[in-house]
Image 1 (tube, chains in turn yellow, red):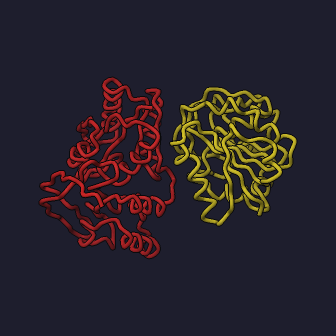
Image 2 (cartoon, rainbow over the protein chains, first blue to last red; image 1 turned 135 degrees about the vertical axis):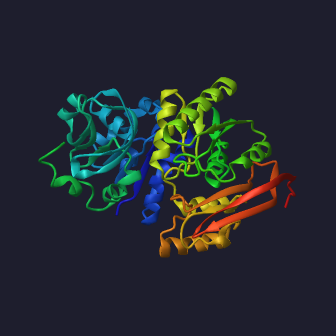
Image 3 (cartoon, rainbow over the protein chains, first blue to last red; image 1 turned 180 degrees about the vertical axis):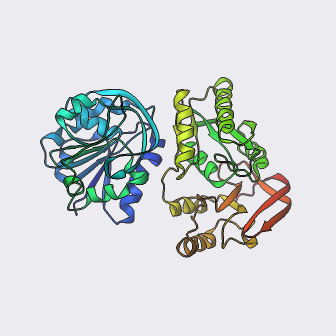
Length: 193
Length: 229
């Protein structure tokens, strides 16, 4: 198993407890080694040292992370696997020139995709009309305005709008495993919500 | 940032406050006194002792009563937060939800409506890590209510310490008791913690217990100067 890097997006260190610690706890329970860096401080040298990168979420009122998206530019050209959670997914979208829209979703929802129960906590989301041109989108919420909940790109870049650390910890463990998340989604590639 | 802390008197709200105080100024405490013993949002036993905790912390408290049904609790919380903003200029709230999406979601929605930050520093944290942090930092916590087998009368008044930690692990495996009581299996009261200037001493108490449901009623308590160890 390749070493995991956690990239934090929260401006306020108090948010570490809420958005980073749950991911740490999931990895620690399985004795998976990891390191951490803030989005402000990451550069392409990290891609050489880590096989898997998890970009964590942040507070509902915190948008400071949007200033540092370019620091992740290397993931487009490197072979590193990346999972962006909430704000982490927003940063992936921006790298691929997919704009964000205002969209508040707070609470528990069930996706049609695999009947997944998910926890949502966000005020911004990907513009579906642009996102579908760049990503495979197996799951969305919303009726009038579709909100992508899962995006996949190049079979190694994944984004979850929901917080998998709450009800979908298995997806985090699959992402860091040798087989990766691709296998978890491959049989669903032909259909989406 | 100036924060308000939701205070129930139990270990979770005070550990959340403790963590938040490392980075921010806690300007006021908010205590909702529910008339409903089975409140969805707010833990109820020994809530009257939050006044002593407020004095021990030297942080002012906004204390409001609520009927304890879902709608009224949330309306009361919204009003209390508005009070906290008006009187103390708070920009955010800290609360002690660990796994309750019901509690977390409601507070997040209200805070978002009011453009306030909502911090949940215990959220989805490992339960044993939380218990260890309490013990390591010399929180004096007692159990004040039980509501699940095999928690019998002997648990009322029991301290959260290393022995309890061992017991919690055993009960978790054998009886699916959540180690921090997140399923309502037990409730707690904090008598002392690092931010208290004085500690709470219980002078008189009584207890009621029937069929693995019971509570400790603190009839009289006072603050006492802490002895440095």
